[in-house]
Image 1 (cartoon, rainbow over the protein chains, first blue to last red):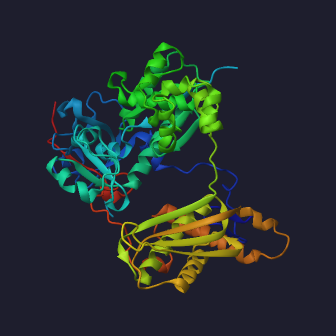
Image 2 (cartoon, rainbow over the protein chains, first blue to last red):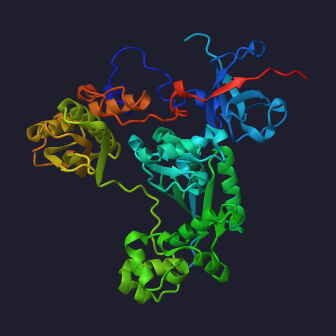
Amino acid sequence: MEPLENEELGTTVAIHAGFPNPAAERKGTPLSLDKLLVHHPSSTYFFRVRGHNWHRQGVFDGDIAIIDRAVTPSGSQLVVWWDEAGSFALSQLALADRQRVWGVVTSIIHPFSS
Amino acid sequence: MKQHVYALVDCNNFFVSCERLFRPELNGQPVVVLSSNDGCAVSRSQEAKALGVPMGAPHWQWRDFFATHGVTAFSANFELYGDISQRITNLLASITPHIEVYSVDESFLDLTELPITDYTEWGKAVRADILKNIGIPVSIGIAPSKTLAKAANDRAKKLPELGGILDLTEQGVATDRYLAGLPIGDVWGVGRQLAPKLHAEGVHTALDLRQLYPPRAQQLMGIHGRQMVEELNGRGLLPFQQAHKPQQMIMRGRQFGQDTSEFYVIEAAVASLAARAAASLRHERHLARRASVILRTNRNKPGYQRLEASVRFYTPTANTGTITSQLVRMLAHDFNSHIKYHKADVLLHDFVPENSLQADLLGMVNLAENTRSQHTMRAIDAINRKYSKTTVTTAAEHLSQAWQPKKKLVSPRYTSAWSDLPEAHLIEYGYG
């Protein structure tokens, strides 16, 4: 079997025994969370969610909100906006100050253990 | 031949704009960003300029003024600025691959081949996109030469009625009027040395220079001057440098947090600077034949001194360990512990391509050793890229942190550290 080349680490690993990997010839792309969650890398920012009153919506203190500024806010979307003191708020668009919308929330990541 | 069209996209007060992105309440407020070590103002908001804060205002002199006039000062947060700069470059590169990244906050685009009918409208759309998607205000100047695009950008930035866009592709009365408003000292390529010479000649504005007889410009300023006149007349002569230019010298330097005569503090600083310089060298896929380190005392104090140590590598190298140990050894030789040093610079020069060693037939290079060293370094770079820049370091870098610059007013690493994300507070969920 051909040695496997790990280009990034510059090391070479040779595997000489066992049944060859039948998928070795197929160069598929592994699934990428980046591609699933980030549609416009240049306009995507992450925020830390603060607050305890959205448990019914499945959103918890410490979650990570993914914000895409390229998305134009509409309908019942969740948005991040800012108040006069400069503090960022997360709410439905209807409850936000439309002049101060910073970006649209496209996903919220909640870890169950760390 | 078809006339060239270039756009210069320049971010307004870039560092301040990056800080305001995550502190929106500071829009409309005076803000400055300070240089490394909180030395002096390097980026000022319009409001700070209006208050009379000059470029390079030393922080210690202006601190009280900032406090009484409500000026918010930040230490430079280069991780943030680098990230935002990359986002803007990516967005521009999606418009055209013909892009020359001129600096952290300026890029030239070659629009010659793009089917644009109205450059002002095009500029407005690009400006709006960058403002909405990334959150940074930019100005755009469009013209048939880079010098003229620079001039257009300057006018677009300074004349509010232009809305940040100026198209100078047509050479006529309107363009003359804009150039008449541009002082000669602000023309790209003129600078502090040439400006007095031109004033003496009666050339006070960009328009005067545009109308200067080209042979006279050449007499005054050499071929460079003639080129400027041609460029201001809309004949693009300056090359568009799209390809990445390999560096000929790499320098990494820092002021110490406080002046020091402790060798171990200086050794730590040199090790850290050498590590960064060597990583940059490997990124360029180069090896260095020479390295030097320069220590300086504070220029503003009497008895300015400078100590330089150099080493020449028989086998060119990009190995952090080799470079660091040789530099420190040379430095130790000449070190005087009675002098308090203020700043250290590490320089790498005299480069050869990484793969040129394989072709060395003289047999003077220890190839096996060199290959092993390259693999080790590549592994370290990969780990540091994946985790953080300082995951794998040489032991000498940790001898002391006392050399680290002061950054008392630095903002969080909003876009590059999970621990520093901006926070969004949930407000009562509404129904209906």
